[in-house]
Image 1 (cartoon, helix red, strand yellow):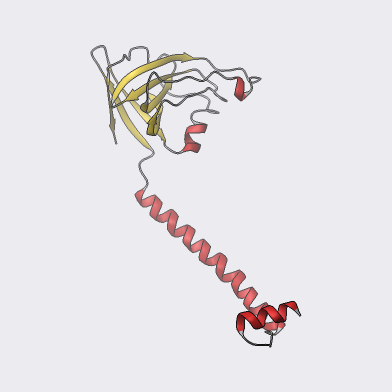
Image 2: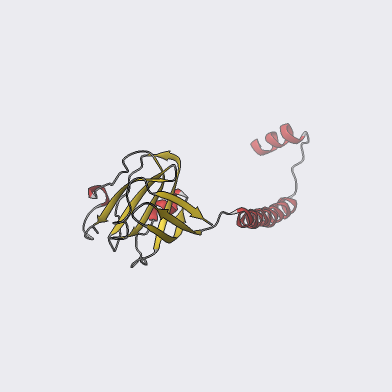
Length: 180
């Protein structure tokens, strides 16, 4: 009775649709809606792939003492930045991961699930503003909330993670450039 009253208020008729008609509409809805969603997702992925920024680039850090070039992988999204280099077995001598910090901030980094030591180069306004060298790997029993957090000396645009020892020649004031 409640369904009939609701139907009369909404449609203005006292007759309910037949069970067969309801089943047909439900089946059609169950087919069309997922197909439409699938088409939308595929279209979004195609358009994102066309406008997606490059995943890799070459960066150059040059100063009075040295000039170094690195092949870097970008970490732009929150998820990419949370994972970073963790879980990887190693990184090459001239390789790194470049964290894009947007908006600029004085964000912290940790060594969660890292399997090798690293250097972090802190970059602001295309200039090296600091380095944190030879960050040790935590043992596997250290809980995430017990890990040390490493911070840049100021707000940064980028943080560059490199194989430990690679950043030894880099100094505050060195120029930073991305070549894509």
